[in-house]
Length: 346
View 1: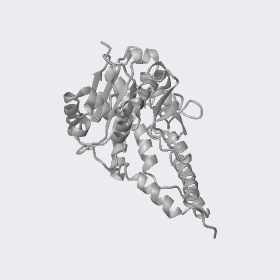
View 2: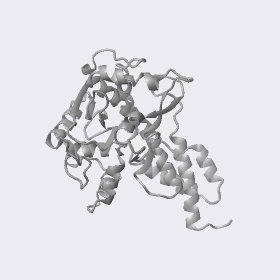
View 3: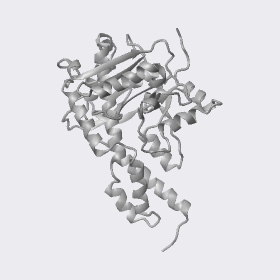
């Protein structure tokens, strides 16, 4: 049997890994309730909103599954890739109008359509964004925590260049930093809580404050150059906390929101204590850890050219050498050597 050099083996293996990640990121069913229709490409943050704010250049810098697949195949280690706003934060989340029930538009009309946004209360607005953040994170966690597909393993076994055991080991190591199976189940339980209040047409049923703590911090005194939404577990929390930083649109301000389950009192007090000590610094850290942070062109270039190496410090905070790091209260409060809020405008 012909022997291949390490470089050739690594190159072919990367192609297999990229193909596998792309395959695992596919989702065949709309996430809303028990909908069986195939999802379309949904945006975590609306394209039109990005176009008017942090994406005026036509793109943002972020890490997506799609950019990771591309970088992996090209042997590039790059956390923040230049992503067109048409593809920023895109995931197969909810069904569309064609061959579906239009969940992608109906469920989120209150955070996207002019007159709907204007008449929506800020609590309702934050709640729907929190639901979208949860679903985006569920898709991301399920993608990264899933095992290598049988199809890729079969192809690897038939390829003389690839050692399928090494390939599988590499993927399993990459998945260690994702949430555990138990945690993923809690994501699903949180999803059920949300959908108990969100009707199929996007209207709310019942009093959401009965089951959720909803908190909003307005940030109109700052020029906003980054955004992101996500959901994370923190120590001692029963359920993930959904949170995000959203640029202003229509009559809604720049805002940071956090939504937690009412029966998870520690989650509410945990982030409340952090945000009361260092609001902007803590928001920077939380959004950085959202798994969905987007940087404007201007902010990215500023961080990259910083003499203090702010971009590298941001990357080190998001992806530390300690892969299974659990972020504590001090990690979320303290300054890690990067600034994302740069310009005070009032």
